[in-house]
Structures are given as C-alpha cells and as structure tokens.
Image (cartoon, rainbow, N blue to C red; front, side, top):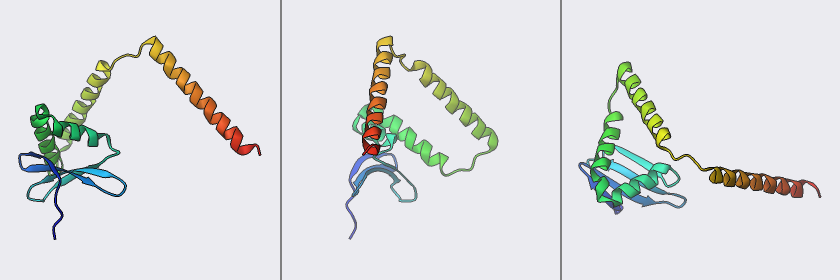
Length: 133
C-alpha cells in the first residue's frame, strides 16, 4: 500500500511535500517522475523559507527557478572556470547582503551586551552551584 503524499505545492515537473517524522518534519522537493529529490529537515533554515515560498503566490516563479537551478546544478559536471565564476557570484551576493543589513543602534548594542553579561553571570552561578558541595 502506498503512503499518501502531503503535496503542498507543485512547480513545473516538481512537487513539494511536507512529511512528519517522530523527531523532525521534512520539506521534500521531488521530480514528479521520481528520479531526483532534495529535502530539508525542520531545523534547517531552508525549511521555513521554502514553506513560506509555497504559501505565497508571489514567490511561485522564484520557487520554480530555485528548484530548477538545484536540479540542474546537481545533475551536471561543470568545468573549473564556471565554478570559479559561480563562487565569485556567490561572494558578491554575500557582500550585497552584508551591505544591506541594518546597522544596530547604540541602544541595541548596549542591550545585547547587557544580555550577554547576564547570561555569563548566570552560567558562572550555575557552575559554582554544581561544583561546591
């Protein structure tokens, strides 16, 4: 007897399913013909991102392109020149994301430092309590 699939999205020749396990849930992207698949566990950042893309029709084309890119990248052998160009492009994307990230205010920095200090003090108190009897 075949297991019923929980298909949450279809994109071209691919389907996205959400599966539940005893310890983790999974997002699985599979070619409809079954010859390729990709999955993410719920403790992976991509799990939530893919779920969000599946729920928002505005991201349908972006999701399709992302899936096709992953399918293509995992089913071809590339030459060194292409791979170096690809890594350069990934580096530039990372640089753009860092440049666009918000800069924390002085107050946010102060709050973060205060939280860190409280956590360190709590850790020291716990360590002292465990070793002194």
